[in-house]
Image (cartoon, rainbow, N blue to C red; front, top):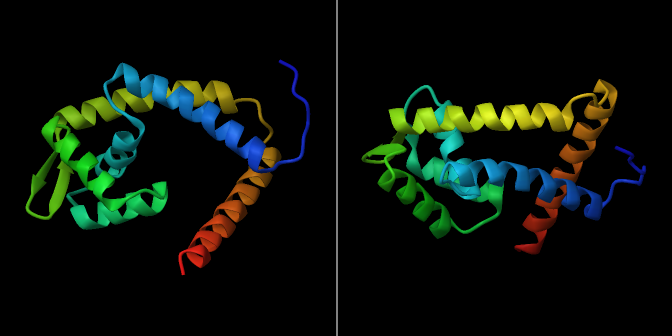
Length: 147
């Protein structure tokens, strides 16, 4: 594979994001999940105990820059599917949810290894610094635009 070096900008970031997301979504589709469902399921699967439902919703809204109603509907979909269970104001992973999450992680880790493998550590560190800065600036821009 030949790559042309171009400076990082919004377009190259967007192209990389959508290409990687398409890989993830191809895995998710095989398992009957969509992107937002996986984003909500992940912190519940990784938690050592129940997760506060309101905190889960707020964190997902902040991460995806989406509406709270949409996220709350997604939580309800995961409950209806038996992937998470609810106890009043908390949600927890079910055995079925954990098994599904682990299958998805196994598949996406394999794809990630193929995608990211062979990239020098110093390039990954520089990219991480740049993407963190872009994220911080974009979040600041959104906060300013919302005033």
